[in-house]
Amino acid sequence: MSKERNKIIPASYLALIKDGKILMQRRFNTGFMDGYYSLVAGHVDKGENFTGAIIRETKEEAGIDFKPEDLKMVHIMHRDSKIDYPQGVAEGVNERVDAFFMADKWEGEIKNIEPHKCDDLSWFDVKNLPENTIPYVKEAINCIIKKQFYSEFGW
Picture (cartoon, rainbow, N blue to C red):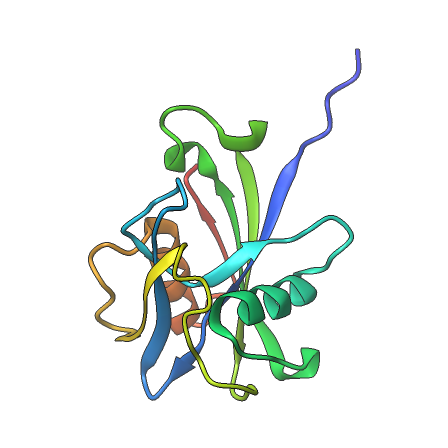
């Protein structure tokens, strides 16, 4: 009897922190955690790496560009997303690996490029995040602030 191989969905996130504030977006009309704050982020497409995904997503969502060498991976989270989908596991897969990046420099002006998916793009004090922050994102931000490179969530 053979075991079925594990399937995991990868995603990249940008923890852009400047002067003690972090850039966050409020999800809108997406079907997942609408009305809650998250980071600029997105799934890693097939054939794409974590770095390429966050460069692409940041351009698509916030209008800014990064060079790969300007990004630093600061946190990895392995999570069980069943907690996120009480009605049933999305996409048939409940395990996720999330890579969180930081950067000190970028090109372009930060702006909300996807108002149909995000109704607020604002800076918040890293020690006083909005109450309606997605729980695993809040946990990841706290880990980043503590310089904890790895965490597990939802198990």
